[in-house]
Image (cartoon, rainbow, N blue to C red; front, side, top):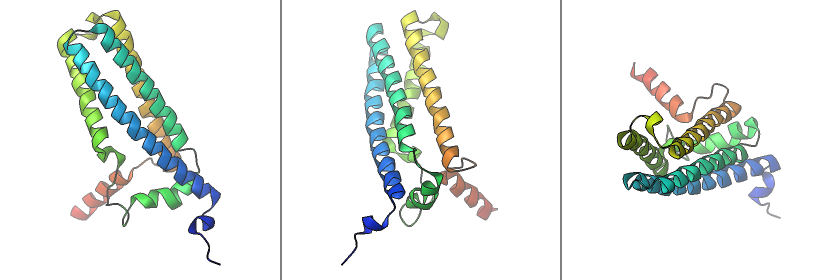
Length: 180
């Protein structure tokens, strides 16, 4: 009788892989939706449609909260499962040295669109204390949810890797050592 390879993988490992995959698939949807809303925000700003801009910023805040919740779900498994199964799957021979989620093209696009929106906000509306109050409130909420998301991502990294150093950071650290 031939055993199925899934039968030989522990339930904890199966759960870790499931969460990791589902979570990252959800992140992808969130990022793409954020890109659409960032475009809408830029368009609303350019057209001076403050209500639409406020709604877009509020939706971006909600998506950032969803991203943080997804991150909690995605990382809700043991550091042992991460170290023995998940992290090695992101290294050679499965992926190239220095792999990082920040290399995702949609993530890069999101960061670029965010920077563009931030710069345009100042360019079009001036200093933040001059902005219409509804826009200021929505913008501040978006910035707060973004800060919370980044803080939580750092905690997730530390949960799995004691020093929080990513594969990409390790790759470049080792590369610098060999080039000296």
